[in-house]
Length: 402
Image (cartoon, rainbow, N blue to C red; front, side):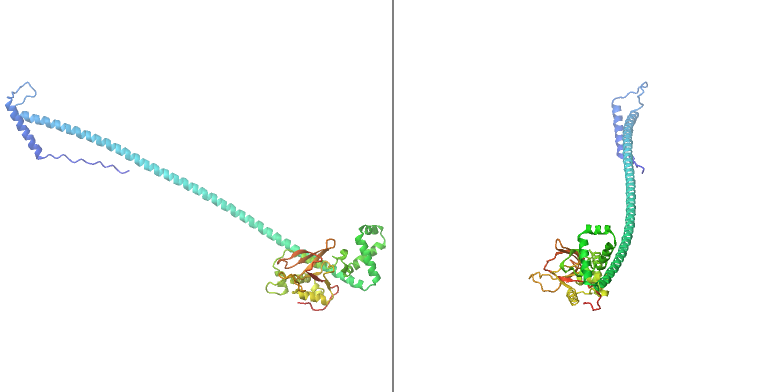
């Protein structure tokens, strides 16, 4: 704290006027004393030897009185000044103490704020750290899930391929048996057809026949295995028992693609560099997965009209008035949106999945149906169905339509 400086008082200067005035008073007193015939009293302590002594003493006494008053006045003023100075010093000290206290309080508040800020920063860091750990855990779980999904997808694809291969082997064996069966007699064929129909429509009779045992039941079962595929050849009357016998492998492949959008796997496989209307490419791709294109039983085609022409050229075309089978290739002729007319040419193609003869409904799997692979349903008598192409039973060396 800085020292408080007190203002020094200027010394009292005597002037000549005061001296002259005193001398005048003295002269006046001497005259007065002479006129009053002052008598010296030796016993009086206030006696004076001369009027001059009296005047001198009176002036002296008056000067002492004035001096004492001045001293007292100065002392009183000094005491007041000292008291005021003390009070000012006290107030100044209190002011300084108050300033110091406020500063200390501000420093304390600042330190507290810093502590709170540090605590907040620490909490934020902990939250960030916790969030980072959660993100890391989520990433780890996502990676594991992706790996698991990829593994499942690979296993599914592998299982699908194995299933397709097995279906191809079964279909090939069935075709070979069919070839041999065709070389048999008409009597054996008719007997087999009647036996199979009887077994399908009468399950109880079949169970009874098997329970009865003997070579009869064994022979019937062998006939079913050998001539099962023949029923598809005679399914022009819409027999529900034989509608799903043929080309099940191609339907399985098509069904495994449900939900695929854009058609890139199919039109790029066909050889196109950019997107085209890919319904025919999808059908051809499914046939390729079942080795039917290499066998020559299904054409490779990207245009629906070319596909129709191929089936008609190979006597494998069925009009829409006939019932299709599972695995048949279904062709559509859409109505013109403006005129409602049909031009007799195919605009779209798909694969027949199944036929419900009770409800007269045909279920299909189609590529490029709203730009995706979808399952659709049609009434058998729908006029927009143009007809069906049936995969050949026997290999052909004819070139496929492109």
